[in-house]
Amino acid sequence: MNTLSTRSTALAFALALAGLALPSLAAADDKNGYVVLKGGVYFPTATNVIGALNQVNLGTFPTSGDVELGVGTSFGILGIQLAAGYLWTAKNEANGSIAVGGVPVTGVLQLRFPIFFVVPYIEAGVGFYTNTAKLTVGTSISTTKVAFMAPLGGGVDLLLGPFLAGVEARYLYINPTSYTWGTFPVSTLNMQGVVLTGNLGYRF
Image (cartoon, rainbow, N blue to C red):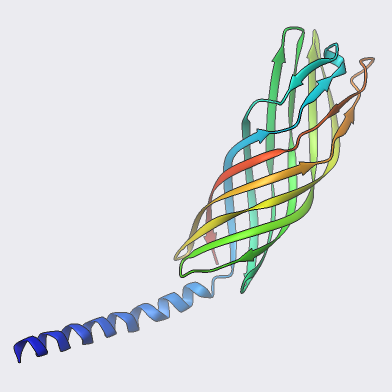
């Protein structure tokens, strides 16, 4: 009898806790908007030959970095995110160097698959990359161009009350862009690559 009473008390306590938790979970589900800060690693994947460096084959640029600030919202399994940030890399050669950095602006559509507080997603979108390439061969010369870009990737978000934490991987297609530095030969930069980021955000 005592055992039955104990079990009944425990069941009642569990139901009471569930009753308290469910409104909190429902409130959390109402938080469809968010702002997110992303930071991570940029892995360039394209080969570049720079005429201004006497047709030096740079191979791929070295691994570097990416930071972004985004804002988004979701409608069930659909999501929209707009983001802007800074993406950069650089390489040194015996007869000079080239540093590339600029602002990527992207808009993506997401398919989101909520599993309790874990939300995996895939995404694709379009944008542009305002890119400044600085060539140093004795003196430094900079040229800025705007190129079309298209991100394709996915990630996982953890919804922790009003906060968001996650990881994301994107392939960035960036349209090859021709650059002219003074009297040097025209060169084409290919900035396509993969970006891996860790994300922290606030939901509202």
